Length: 275
Image 1 (cartoon, rainbow, N blue to C red):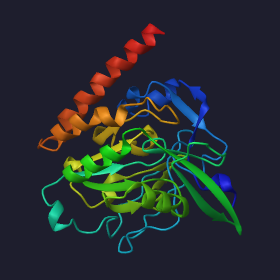
Image 2: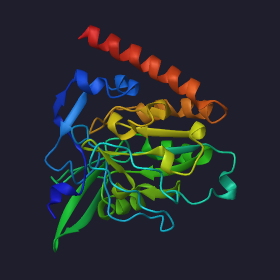
Image 3: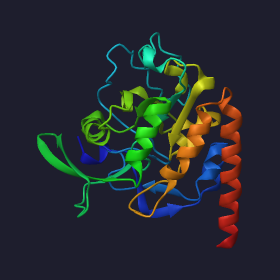
Image 4: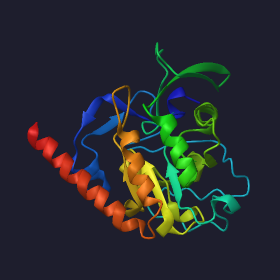
């Protein structure tokens, strides 16, 4: 297996604005710039032409792995859902699906002096070191989200990489479940996270992701975030905490999510005009 197939990720250097990508979903308007694939994006997780994430083993052994679609059609819902029954302690909470790469962390095969984690990954008998940077305020963000919601990690990256990263990142046991690449639907060249397969009421499901392709089936459930690489002055996760505190109390998540996307669209358009 080529090391480039482990992490689905985007390149910081190759930033582009694509009108065709902006049409993928209304939520994509919140992203000021779309990134193309990096050298190892198929190993990590994000875009593929707009890639998503990856994995080799679903942590939920009771969930049936959905059929991968190669012809662009959407697969039928699985006989069993991806998530187990909700814990008693989470009853009444909404479910938040959180992406990993470029949303919570940024990973690279190239050495990073200030890496928060170094994760060894074995590929075809050779151990490769993956250097991982944590996004600013990610610890506080995860702790708050764990208090307010049933949280699920859903990445298109392979489990052999993403699982140990999640072990190091989530010291509080915030994630009730972890879903990886095989839990995605391969749709028109992208790994898509089909929220209808989770086994939760869609009106109470939110997805936090930097890639609009990841939630192309359910853009109305998305909280889009800007792709993050190494800007240590970034405050996006911190700034989202008050929004999620309010959202946790709302019965109708769609109206708040629509308002958020509208505000971010206006902000993005203003920033583009300034440039």
